[in-house]
Image (cartoon, one colour):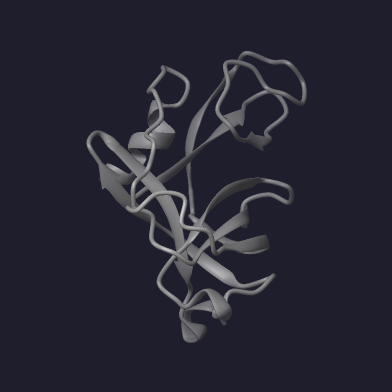
Length: 137
């Protein structure tokens, strides 16, 4: 799948390169103890500049999703799932990604997922795949 890669900055490098170690990093504010995304130099909740990346479990649930049916470029496989995933660490800690590793028709709201990474150059894209039923229980 053809993807446009992000520009790496001091604020987002841990997020985009944590996959090299198999770890998802989210920014966390030391002052109010909240995780937030996207990474930024200050907390969007309290304004503190005492923020930085922290490793998270990479587990979450599909909050909502859509199945793309349109072939936008010849390199883009279709159909594919674009989902908002809410991470287990904190209610409301969400971000947009793709769900892979299953048929689009199998994806559903509340589906347990686990991060996996796809490397492109020096960027590791965080994608999500279904958690096996026995591991989810």
